[in-house]
Image 1 (cartoon, rainbow, N blue to C red):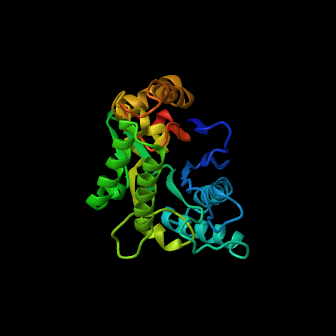
Image 2: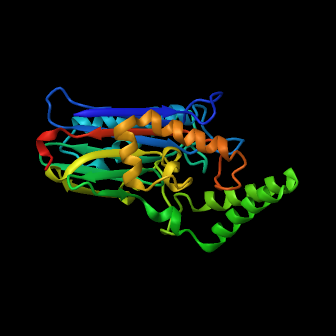
Length: 292
């Protein structure tokens, strides 16, 4: 068994809003890993006095504890309980109904001698490498399926940035885009996408499943900041990304992402919402007893 993980803020002057951790119970019966990417709110009131790093640490830590210790619970049930527990920790001081209340993406994976379970909510990602070497991405695709006007607003923001438009015009376009996306986050009716915030009901909307343990060689959970190596900068496919982490380590992946970000600081060649993003990854190479 090998575990390798890393986490780095996009801006060293700010706390990392990601959470990444793994647990290997002393019983030796498998393990668990959790990766969260906190949603950075726009400037202004969020209704919460604690902030996103507090939220992701609290939610992620509770999720990991439940996933590792309460093996009779599904990962969805673990997430629902973790959301409820975290909400209870600050409902008396914060407005959890605020649309910008702290929230995050979730990737959770748990394995034992029989199976590997997974759960993915929003745009963080899990890669599952089979014993045959094939790498399968597990993703929540709803952010890629938003209404056409969202893509149009995003394209306008990027076009204004590339054209060197006046800052006020760029900010107005970005504000319109952010508000449109916010209106679809955790919106009722199934027309948008979902993040873990204060409603435990979203746990039932996560992408979840399981794979026979004997067919899995390794697992790699990524926030989108780390997944930029493939998704944004097109430096290799998912199999190449996982091979890089296996050979050089999770920190090397983030270092390569930072190099690519610095080479395109304005996002002209590789459009993205932030010049640098928090980047976290957890790699778990399962023991050789189950490899072919």
